[in-house]
Length: 169
Image (cartoon, rainbow, N blue to C red; front, side):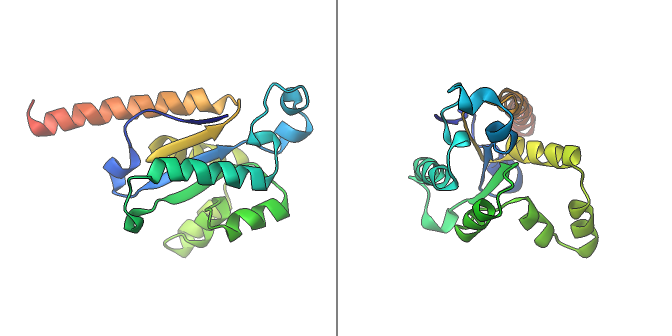
């Protein structure tokens, strides 16, 4: 059920920051969608936060198995999960969520701007994080995955062209 894209690490090339972004589809996936109930999606999108964290820890181990401990990546979770208990568990296990961006904004004006984003603006912000991340991890079936994969491929092609121009080839 786990999938990570096969593109070159992108985010580290751009910002020199090693970060993993995972998309955990929740909320309507569990309540109004037939994906979980009909068995169309049997991934951790339909399971508990503990199942998700177990899968994420395995994914992180696979991604970072050759990474020095000093370079362990930041792990950001894009989710529409609303359960306070699940959010608490994710934060307790050092996963970064949207509200953490607000809390760690570089100044008060940026924090206010992040805190005031509507759901569409937040979706756009998190889509950009998924596209620009060093590694993108996702589970199950959602429409966002092909969109993000396409964005990552387009970004990678632009980076390759820029690198060719800089090297004079």
